[in-house]
Amino acid sequence: MTSVLPLWFEVGSMIALVAILVLDLLLIIKRPHVPSMREASLWVGFYVLLALVFAGAIFLLGDVQHGTEFLAGWLTEYSLSIDNLFVFVLILASFKVPHAYQQRALMIGIILALIFRGLFILAGAAIIERFIAVFFLFGAWLIWTAWQQVKPGGHDDEGDSWIIRQVKKVMPFSDHYDGGKLRTTIDGKRMWTPFMLVLISLGATDLLFALDSIPAIFGITQSPFIVFTANVFALMGLRQLYFLLGGLLDKLEYLKYGIAAILAFIGVKLILHALHENELPFINGGHHVPVPEINIWMSLGFIVAAMAVATIASVVKMQREAKAHGERLHLGAADTPED
Image (cartoon, rainbow, N blue to C red; front, side):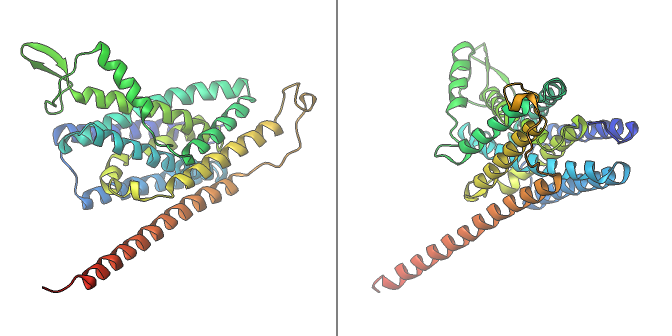
């Protein structure tokens, strides 16, 4: 797809986004701390507003098509990033990362995610340009990933545990953290701290999630600029979102079903698009297959609806369970005989 956005806007956007990420990282290094709920809320709100302003700029400088593609892509990547965040919560908890250094671990994890996704975007754009049939593979992968989301054990971290076991075989590690350092000295011997294991685990997780997120957004737009910026905006504020929603993520029981529905929907859309643009000789004699295509407005509507339904259903269940628990406590207190 040929971009209709001005070159100065694309270049300026990239510079500004990198500058914001660098500033965010420097703030963490200078002042490691656990942000308050108010601070986390303000930062998350700021990054969401920034993404909406950016979308407005695309509508004004580009066209409705590009602006809508960015919104749909950003929402898709944001929902997948929340799922990524759920695994981050499990990793930081399992390694018992000190609270003051959780922000640093998260920020490094986010930077690793950006690097992996950037590489995948470049590779994906090159492959799509030369081989449109790759959408069949992308679509099948997303549908399979959607099934992995909803089946029992969908968030199992056995893969990460296997990686960590292999790393421990070849690298010496201490049992305790030394602030936010990666290396420490114990009895005169240089060793890696558990913080290094945390970063390796986060990096492995980022790599796996990049395999899902990049095909998903290429199902919405083939513009590398929109693909990359949507990913950057989805990851910006993820660190603060961790402290805002960390305790709620495991309670949003139906969130994984909403994410799975989005992945399956985009997977079907990719396969339909591949059939419509088909050039494979063993399918319909190498001719285009007359199948319906899903437009960007339908995609945007489905993404918003899936996340809204999943979130609302989760909150309703939480409220019902809290109410039932309160009633059981009340009945238990009433049945307790007086002394």
